[in-house]
Image (tube, rainbow, N blue to C red; front, top):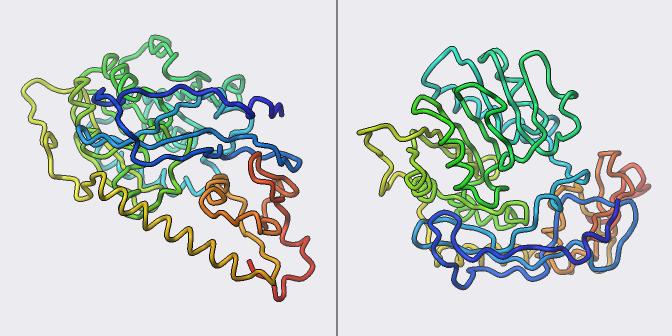
Length: 374
């Protein structure tokens, strides 16, 4: 791996709200030298790699949250990107999403299903008996399309923003997207593009982390460079109204990133938008509420730090080399006092993070954990 590209990482600064285009004012939270995540390396790196200044904005006008600085996907998603559906906790969330789709699907049989951000095609494979043709679009599969496609699943290893929907060649019946919209720098343009290629019978099912539950649960550790966008129900309704769509239904899945699942379509003539200026969301937020919950989160992180410092006479181990672990090290200032991070995954054994110089080791390599702290 060429780590030099992570030394001075280029980014571009957003100047306006990605949904209502209101000019950005002072960010609500600033994150100086914020770490990239999901990048493992085979040796300890003590230099300053993998950090970029970041900030969180919240738009009072439309209820949308967004990061200020956009790191290009070519940096964030390459051969170091580890997130896959199969074999991960995401499977449970996909099952909830599939149930949401089943409960809201208006027509059967279906000719085609398109998934934006199909990952390892787990979701498409679950739906293969529902449609004649299934199409997956995901840049992480570029060059590996044949590995994941079969007789009725066709893969395109492209960013959807650059993809020509004419390659599919059929009217769209169902369009899916699971945990992709938060990674798109211009989400409104993406929604507009797919609506322009659909008719009023096409159904869209999207899920992504919702800002409401993130705030309610004070889970600010879920904010990171890869998630550019943080939607509320209000901001979803605003966006759909802007681009000619309408919300059919939504639900929250509190057990996986506080996920917001939505079903929408192209706006039909004379239809009544029951969610316009809605009070359907029971988790309405504002800047004061965000800052109040952020203080609670920081208090929790400071308490964890005090616990680490209280074990000054013991050897301390972390357990679980999670993809997002550098974020905890960002908030817990004495995290570096950990001796190592224990993890049963042999693929991570002896690795480090790009920006966290603590080695990952197998628990079996520690001869005696007695009187130590995990």
